[in-house]
Length: 247
Image 1 (tube, helix red, strand yellow):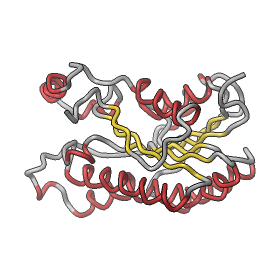
Image 2 (cartoon, helix red, strand yellow):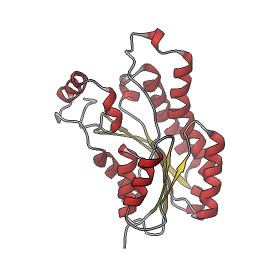
Image 3 (cartoon, rainbow, N blue to C red):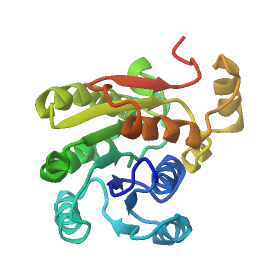
């Protein structure tokens, strides 16, 4: 018997990277997994085909598309009949030097906030009835150490992740006791998103980390799995998963 047998998990942005690693660990623990993607349907299909167990599926649901999110929540209620865990992992960014304010135009700033901050809120809002009905509902928001330090790929991304951390606390207070809400804050990971960093930037990140390496996505996914299985009294906090980079 898996620790998550009979439960259903939704992982946004689940086709690759941390989302895919999380979906895989949840499936191995016995959960039925729904993953969302924005563009790469082939990656999502490959992931679903590779997951152990049955009943997994992928849905094209961009994080900035609120009507699509509402439709997905309704479809989960009709198809899976329940939702126990929501992992808000979908995100998007690009590297813009923090001092280059002109390069961070309004359109991209709004896009970053829509995907990384508004999208998670809209997904919680849409999924709230299902998570409440679960009796053990959990939301895990994937933040970032950039939201703590004000660093990262660009200023808008850092602001969005800081907002996500604050929103985690607000939602934990508002939705308790029916739903727990927790955030994890990874540092740089070995995912496709790291391709935006130059070798020199990667080397600098590694050198500044006390563990002298970059995280594997499975290491962060293991913390998310723990929140859904054994860490059941954790609520309303942000857990750094960063090898000590905040030191």
